[in-house]
Image 1 (cartoon, rainbow, N blue to C red):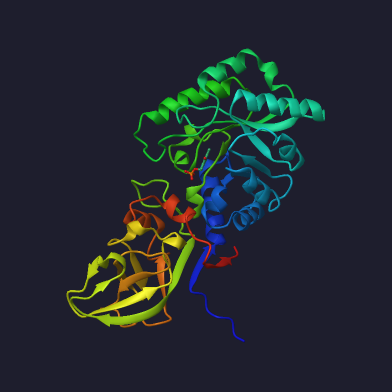
Image 2: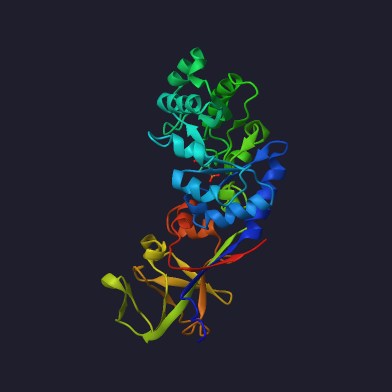
Length: 364
Ligand SMILES: *Cc1c(COP(=O)(O)O)cnc(C)c1O
């Protein structure tokens, strides 16, 4: 029996992700370029992305959660570093050591636990030391940093892979907080001569070479989100989302469309219902603002976005017939534009991509 066509299809262009990584790597050379593949590779598949980037020469991967680190660890060579940003929680040290994962040490207790683990194992254990320079989320506070510098024996057994920090507003090049964080970070890194320093996320790379240090940590730019929101996007789009037209009907005034009767026909209208909804990550805030694309034509969302379905106005698009696939994200609908329509950022659109899509990966 022939395989049924999928109701919705996410196509991930691994070649475009690799091209974006190479582009960023060239911009930051001689600094190195890592890859942030947290949140399942910004929704596109951390294992597939990490594997493709490792093949292209990437040797540094960052994730948020320990379980993400375990998945990526199996996808990349043992010699590649996989750093877990969340920090070392109680009872996890042995698992980190056994699986060759590098913890980020974010507070004095984590430093103590990792140092104890190293001494017990009789070996040096790698870790990244995270200094908070303004985000006030994770990392050593300035006070904790000063205390550590006054008592370096606390780091016995720890082989520092990086000294790192994270920028607050790197997508705003004129925001003075960038320079303030840079100055604070310079002070911390100077206290650890010979240890590679890591500071810039995607947008940080575009703040210039002062921000590159030894290892950059781009995430969003790899996946095609514009790291320079005030300027044209230098990155390539990497994902295409298509949903099938399940049914088309004709309605006329005063009929309404969808839950809450939020949209009312004022003329004879052709309504197409497509197989995507908020359960797939297509947010309810698209109401009145979202669009689909078919054969060079924009098709506006009408009515509420529901769990499984979205309704679009195809009155002026006779080619929009049952079974056709419409584009929701892709060459005609770049992720940043899609996000703006929903009142959010590209990061949220990608990381909420649902589990119901058929997925196709285009190999580099
Ligand atoms: C998510 C994250 C990054 C990547 O940020 P982008 O803006 O997506 O490039 C880098 N560093 C840290 C610590 C992060 O949490």
